[in-house]
Image (cartoon, rainbow, N blue to C red):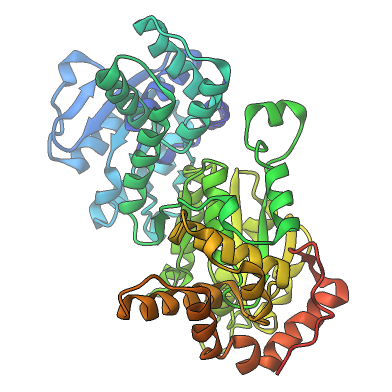
Length: 503
């Protein structure tokens, strides 16, 4: 028995008269309620919606209270007081603001306490007026778990006479998590219709369905992740840490006893590969990448920002396993002391870090920050993230690796024509982003002269650039001192903190 079924049956036995169930899985929740009705003394089940009125129950009542929600509630009282029954009202949240509906519900709440009757309101979202908050009990209906999804996939495979190897089945079930049973069935039907069986490439169909879910919101973006771990030049400690956790979201890891990885906080200088790392993690782990623009959480109405934060959390958990990327979190929560916005930022931040500390869902959070002074100290406390990495300026070996990564993409056949060692030596204090920009500028030089760009062009472009390490020397020195004090783990193997910034 699922946790929802247990809680729902407990509410029935405890005679909670009014139960509010927010879910988009109307069909599945109704089946679960009907199953609970059977186990709880074979209760009668009545189903009402605005268009067709009552559709189930006594045949004589079919069609009653069509387009009349108040009459639908009045019908509850007409059923004998001693008759155990459950009344399911679909989309009834739309009528709760009506004074006659609200008053009738409160009257029923008092009357049904002594009767074996329960009202279950099924709605796609929580929309409860304040005057009904005390009489309605909210019961969350979770999306299908791994066992339910696995059963559904195996049922279809049996029906079509196909089989999947355990590894592929595990990956497919993991990818399906966060989708409703109806969406899962649509994807499976589409895959079977396309090539007659389930294939490894069908995981992309699942990700596309998740993209559809994200597009329907205004809070998160489904970010395409095509970068590989090999696209990151240097940062060997960080890459080793990530590679060791590549299988941590698998069922084998659960059986081993491993908890889900929680996330990373990447602190460091701008342009050193923090955002690139977030994208590479999602691609390497075959997980959808969700990008949170924290500014979208804040809205004008009182309480709406907190509501959006909870919605963001629910959406991320519904699409888990996934990577949640929060870029420049230091700017997002710089006002978390509550001054100037009536405490809205503080409350949103409080909700967020509480979730970070307590979450058990497979949402891997990758947060990046440039200014450690702007970060609230609470977010640095152990337990929010698995690890805090400092991403500093690349050393000479790492600069050489970064040049090689970019030039391999730009001139894969002509890589040998470039002096990588000289380029790395001549670009001290350059970040990865600045190295990339110097290559783009060199390409402009070569293109304008109708020839290919050379090592000399790259060095000329670099000589005209003033790296951030010089323009923001004090801020960078503060970051380096903070990391050198042991506040974070070094992302690079070769510690370059002792290297003095050159003028």
